[in-house]
Image: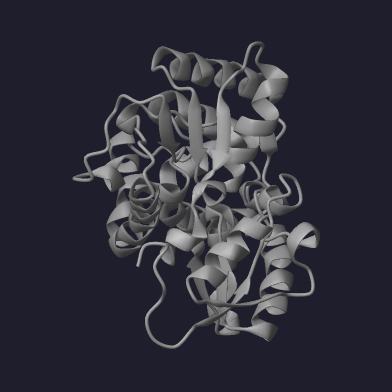
Length: 314
């Protein structure tokens, strides 16, 4: 049976209150990707991660745990109590160190590519707040509204006027949702794939790889960003294959309902991975939630999941 929203909500609220993000990752871990890059703290234009890509290794493990809890008996014990006894986020990090480095490198690639193209970006480091996208997506409107106002207040205090978002969930909530909930919201929000000039990216050496592209729902269907990602891939020498459901008609990966029903999420994701892998085993995504959900099923279909960001800094 699906997990209770009240239990999930209480865990999310507690983690955001203590650590600033829904999974409960230390801010120093979220900002570790920027170490030694020399990105200034002070700038009116910032790269904004919302600790999304950094969360993927934790998220994969947590969803696996939630799936086991969903299938097991929970007659008298609340999910919050069970999770408190079974989940230690710090221990997950130790098990997935190589994965952590991979996702940190994805963000580094984006930041380096932006700077190489002459963009003077800043970064808030451990002060960077979580966008609150999951609160909105789970329908926790009061929590989201209060959180969004705090985030906007911090941006104003730091003199932020322009945000370069690196994932679809953060981009969508900042550009489309915040203006509906915050009076006077005046921050320009763009996605990094809209900023990068494909002609200034290096070519892949050797034989051109074949990939099948998976468009995130929030990027393609809701934000109607379809061509920039294809132009980037093709410009660096990637052969892009299109599934039947792509672009504005893209198919869901199963997220973000994995927090409420990992089993249903997995079933939805399996339909998508089966469709993609029929065309090509190398699947390219551009969303941390899509990466997490598709990765859970990749081995079953002999697929290899990559993020667009892994191609742009050669």
